[in-house]
Length: 341
Figure 1: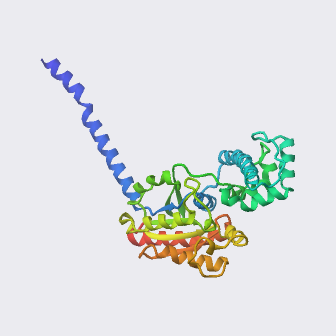
Figure 2 (figure 1 turned 60 degrees about the vertical axis):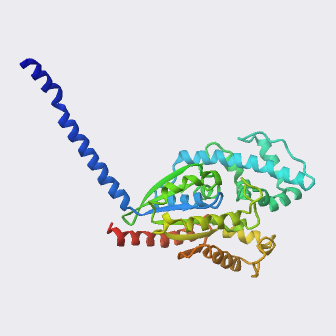
Figure 3 (figure 1 turned 30 degrees about the horizontal axis):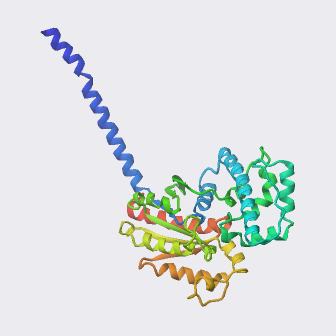
């Protein structure tokens, strides 16, 4: 009997220690969660191809550790695929308008020297250049002319992408990415989520945990259609999306910041298209200043909440960093006032 009791004690004796270890881990987890909750959080939202991910890359380059070689290699390969698909689309545009074009049969990338010569000759074709001018109507990838300029560099397997290369290439966000930066010894957590319609349900879980919403829209898309819904104007979709986000009760405690992005492309677009043809209530000059003022006011009309508006060009490193410094500083200062963090 005594032996039996001793055996029981021997079996049970580790339990209090294990229970204590679990309690200590739970307390550690709770402490870490409280610290995490106090860190200021920025949620970057917007419709697809608005420039959100380019903005995040700017933050990586300016506040983080930069972009590693593996990601640069991934983007180098992706850039070649974008060139291959873009040329295919431009050939289809020429066929759509019955513009004469001797279309080469390109092999999938990496390109042969013969393929590169064909691409170079295409850029001398008036039909191909005309297709480039209207490519935005068919959702030709932004900055495609930049990709064509750099295609020989991208095609070299040992080429390392520059920071500007990384900013100019569009790779859609398909999931949720969290970044943590330390800026002037203050932490900042940034969430980047996909903007396509099918991905927007992923946003809601983050609404209750962020301090600021940064909504990015492509202002140059005033006469374009959604890739996933060819009947819907992209800028109308962005305005409706902003209205839903800014009036969501879960976000009543958040600051709202609006980036009217791709001002560089807007300047080009206004040379060949009139805003009033699509937005008939627009009565200003067909110039970037009047267009920015009109759409800035239109977005702000969608909510009674105070919204700070910034015209931006997220591929312009110097200008974007100046705006980001101002925006992020205000987020951190508010967090310090609220939590003393």
